Length: 130
Image 1 (tube, rainbow, N blue to C red):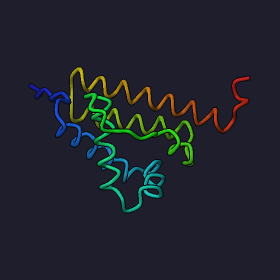
Image 2 (image 1 turned 45 degrees about the vertical axis):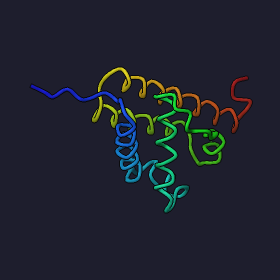
Image 3 (image 1 turned 135 degrees about the horizontal axis):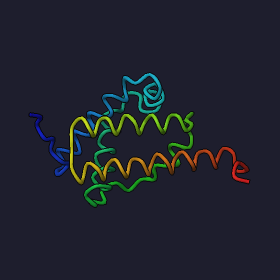
């Protein structure tokens, strides 16, 4: 008999998700070096920002007030990076949580990855849709 995983319900759950996810990101061969080049030794600050970001997305706390897309536009990333980021995120959620809010987190992460991939492609090659 398998134990049912909890849903994402509290700020502590957000912290657990973000910490587990970025622990994987930091050691990932594809996207880890990109994050390391940008975040460098500022992981505590980046994680705090991500706690606010996911709290705002999942709980409506409005703690995150940044503009994430411009930061990503400057990175050396392509579609494969966004899809890989999403795969790591989904695997992390599935390893720790189950339920409606966990499903919502995966759905919102999928939307983010899709939109960012599209917008980065548009910005770098505006004639690609003609």
